[in-house]
Amino acid sequence: MPPNEPFRSSYRGVPPGTRLNGIYEIEAMIGAGGMGEVYKCREIQTGAPVAVKMLLPDMVDNEAALALFRREASALHNLPHDAIVRYFLFTIEPVLQRPYLAMEFVDGRSLSEMLKDGPLTFEALVKLMQRVASGLQAAHERGIIHRDVSPDNIIAPLGDVTRAKIIDFGIARSTQMGDKTIIGSNFAGKENYASPEQAGLFGNDVTGKSDVYSLGLVLFYALTGQKLNMGGSNFELIEKRRRVPDLGAVDLRIRPLLEQMLQPDPAQRPTMADIAAWKGAAVASTLQRGFNPLARPDSPALASATDVRTSPPGGRRALWLGGAVAAALLVLGGGGYAFYNLVWSAPSVAALPPPPVLGSPKSAADKSTEMSSGQSDLARPDVTKPVSKPEPVRPEPVKLPAQPPPVAPPPSADAPGRVDRIRKYIEQYDGGDCFFVLPVAVSQSAAVVEGFGASATPFDGFDKAFRRDQGFGASVGVRQVTPAQCPAIRFLTQAGTNQARAPRIILATTEVKPGETLTGTIENFANRVVELLLVTDRGEVQSMSYLLKPGTDSLSFALPMPRAAGPQLVLAVATPRVLDSLRQPRPMAADTFFLQAGSEAQRANLTITAAARYVMLKN
Image (cartoon, rainbow, N blue to C red; front, top):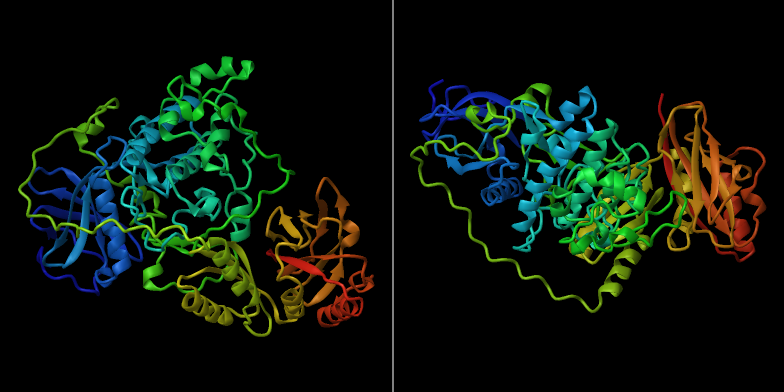
């Protein structure tokens, strides 16, 4: 095919030899996904390697995808820092009619790929931390938040962490311009490295402190070789971020720093500038004296940080705060993530989640040839400044459309009332038989909703109705139950709508093998009687209340699971006094069990509340 023959949809990728604007020549495709492709190219005039990200032909007219592309170009254009991949050009190839972004080619491995060989040494970790923090601080100073700090987005040229590069600013947000991501205030980024704010806590206010939290999780993985398990369902994603995770495996020399980086409250975290200036040598002596190893004379933000305390694992939970959490993330590198066992409503084009642009997940070959600086740069491990090279003659790049900064709406005096109305709308929505939804986190313009049902179809209707009536879309996660479990869902519809008074179930995991033991706790029951029920996939209800053990403000349990695979429901029912119908000595069919329980409560004029958690048994 001649170099500039129009792209044919039957050909997967643009062939080698194709020239882009007469500036770059494609050598090979090194990555591809649902929205775009990444190519290794050479600059025609100099022969220097360049990485080019190019939208797919059928994405050219996709407003959301194009906006993400422009966002990355704009972010990189304003970030001249050696720890951030360098931007060269954003334009549209006139023959192919496809937008592309040219940037430096990093000949190295991603941190996630490097960690497959084992954790970093303490010394290497500190160097990596300071370099990455320095680059992100430069971004924060320009009002740009990365929002997707993860091992996949840190590349080490030739494995040298002292020259690490931060990539994929495709979902970065500008705080100076006040604009939002394509999906509004919804979560953007990889769930395991998301901050509490990205998960919907603390008003969903994503700032530079969110990058600090994500970097803390990356550092834990890099130092221990083990990822902290911070993912899961909507509920789990939020609950795991209400307290500092267990850092017992972390080197004592840096543990105090990670404790502060992983504070749930962003106001209690250090800045990237503090992290970049951290001196590990001072830690050993200051730990014994009880000093804060982060503190510096010129760091007022950390002056009082020595009083920060982490919540113990069994401590009280903080109040639920409004916000929103993720819709499924569309990753340009050909993959993505979905919360465990969720069926997501299809988002509209305007609500497409911002992905880590054109990159994750990557194959080993992709990661080993991701964007890099010139080869003369690579020969010197201590290079601190990019090597200049002759500027080729370039056509006038396509200018990004100038848009005035959006004017933020004035704070609504009726904000609490609007949140209450949204919550009530969710609680009172009638989706038909075997349908139950509950609000997980709600704000004026965002909502996380979890539901149970035998089919995803009624939840599609809920999503459309909610968007029409409230003016924005909710993140809807569905746990699909068996038809035999539907009587438990109908029971929840009657007893589970008052979530403020419902007991709260916290499970150690939501996926176990048949026959294993599931551990957890129950909270928020005050002085009421709590019954623990297991509803199997076959629709049998078993009373497990005898397994409850009292503790401080909670009840714990170790629940043996059935030996057959399938979805299980764990229910906690709170009542003012004992109801005999909830303590059946033998397993009973769900329809009979819950009919008797409801009738007894009605005869006694008792108000009961209930909560449920979904557990999948997999071989």
